[in-house]
Each structure stands twice: as structure tokens, then as C-alpha cells.
Amino acid sequence: MTEHLMINDRETAFTPGQTILEVAQANQIPIPTICYLKNASPTGRCGICVVEIEGQDKLASSCSTIADPGMKVKTESERVIKERKTIIAKFLSSGNHNCAISGSGGDQWSDFQLKVNKADGADELCPAWGDCRLQDLAYQYQVEMEPANQVAPSDPMELKNPLIVRDFSRCIQCGRCVQACNEVQVNRAIELDESRGKVVTKGDKALIDSNCVFCGECVSACPVGALVEKKSRYIWRPWKTEKIRTTCPYCGVGCQQMLHLQDGKIVKVTGVENAEPNKGRLCVKGRFGYDFIYSKDRLTTPLIKENGEFRGASWDEALDLVTGKFIEIIEKDGPDALAGVSCARSINEDSYQMQKLFRGVFKTNNIDHCART
Image (cartoon, rainbow, N blue to C red; front, side, top):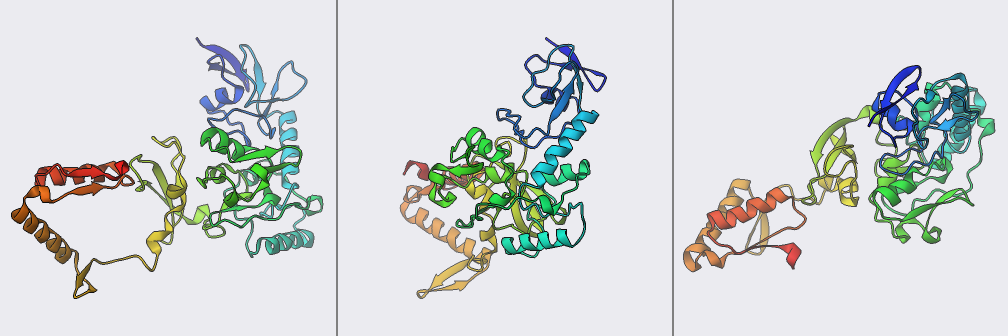
């Protein structure tokens, strides 16, 4: 069953039960959002997605308002734009948003930026600069921010763990990180304490002391610089990197990853949105476990042990040695003298190839999988 409503004087079809935002998105009609998170329950918390509905005195949050037949909606009316500008200005003045947005452009603004840089322990602008939804909207709606209106942060930055920086001074309390944790990943490690206006763990502990599993979904959901990956902080900038899609090698699920390369080196890993099977989600290993490939301790050549000591060897020599040993064992004791254990954390294709090697080449069924041990 299909119904119709009017959006910006354009007749638009929709399915009963859809929100105004869902109808607009399905028809490529832009409505800005901040708190809205796909696959999570809409909250209307930020107010950026407001629209004007004919016959209604108040503006409505499009993410949580169900579309009705005959409804007439304006997404960029004068009232709507004014409201969005007010909300953006409020967010910008709520903390240490020291990006390139400024209304004064004078010494006062520079002093504020230097103060924030000192608090950050860096000499660059916000680590989310160039990847900030709030910044994008401020540019889009030409909202100027005055440093005099800035609210001083009340909670110190959390740097205790090795993976995630929690900067409460940049949090706009949109709730996206909480929904990502509780509704998308269902880890239930954080919640929004309304009385304090702060995202907290149980007992307000540091992440590393909580039941957080460090999947990093909260970081990917954060629209500002409140949650940042520690390893890529002030290193990764979206305009500097090349993106390459690949499959995560850590297990057999086959999660799709986007590698962000800077000067040929991985500086960040994100999930590929709308790609099966993970739909943008990653675990702690898939998101953060990439820098081991640059370790100075990593073996870069095969080693053969002779007289109690290792020496470097070519791949051909090493493989020939292993092949010779296998042939020697089979000729002496038969194929069942060999056994193999495949890794449960390997990709499915590798496990398949290993059992094929043992059954088809070695002629033995002595092949198992470490998930059973």
C-alpha cells in the first residue's frame, strides 16, 4: 500500500509507518541530521532535522515524526533554517570546538584556539577537523561562532586506555555513541546520564575498567571530536588518505573493511557501510589491530634452524625443506603419520585449502579445527 504527501511542493510516495526523514532519504531530498543513527531508534534529540508541517505551530523532528497522507512538509523554510542555525550555534558554543569556524576572526578567536590546543597537548586544530558533522553544518548554514560564548569543559580528557580518547569537552550529548553501543553492537557499556549531561560507563569508570570491549563502534558514530581513535589522532585527515576496500583477515566472518592509507601506510580502519556481512561494524581486532604489520619485531623472511641457531632462508628453500620432510614421513610411516589443525581465527578459505591439502594431497583425514580444543 502506497500513500502520498507533499515535500517542498513535490508529491512524494511513501509506505505507511515511514518517518518523514525516511521518506525524504528514499527520494533523495536532503534533510540534515546529527543524532539520527541508522538502524537505531530515532530520538529527535538534536533537533537539526526539524521540518515545518503546514497547519502545525511547532516544528517537527523529521526523524521521529511519522508521515501522514496529505501532509505538506517544508524542509528548508525560513523558520526551519533559523531554528537550525540556533541549534548549530548552541552546539558550537558547548565546548572546545576549535575548528576553522569563527565569527570574529580576531585575537580572541586565536587565543581560544591556542588554549584548546594546549589542553589537547597538540598544535593542530580539532582531531575531527574535516570529519565532523557539526563543522559541515556550520559551513552549510553559515553559522558563526564567538569564542566569548564558549562554555568551559567540566570533565578532564580520558586517555587511560590505548585505543580511544574520550574528550568530554567536545561532546554535544547527541546520544549516537550510546545507541551504537546499546542498539547496534548491543554491548551496553555506556549510557547517557541526563542529570549530569555526560556519557558514562557503569559506575562512571574509565573505559578500560568497564565492560567495554573496544569495538570502536562509538567512535565511528560520534559526529564530532568527542571520541577519537588514539592511534590515528592528529595523524589521519580524510583529505590526505587513499581508501582501499578489503576483507578482514582475523576470522571467517568476512567483514568488509576500508583501509585508510597515508603515504602508503595504514593509519585507520573503518567498516564498509551497507556491505555484507558486517554492515559497517567491526570488532576490536578488525578496527584497531592493524599496526602490527609495521612492527620491527615482525619476521620478514623464513628462518631455518641449524645447529641450534636460526638462519635466514629464501621461501623456495624453506618450502622445499618442509615438503621434503612431509614426503619423508609419509614414505616411512604412511600418510596417517601426519595431522593438521586449522586455525579457528583464520578465514574460511584458508581452512578449506588446508583440509584439501591433507585429504587430497597427503591422503589422510587427520585434519581438525582448533575451535574444538
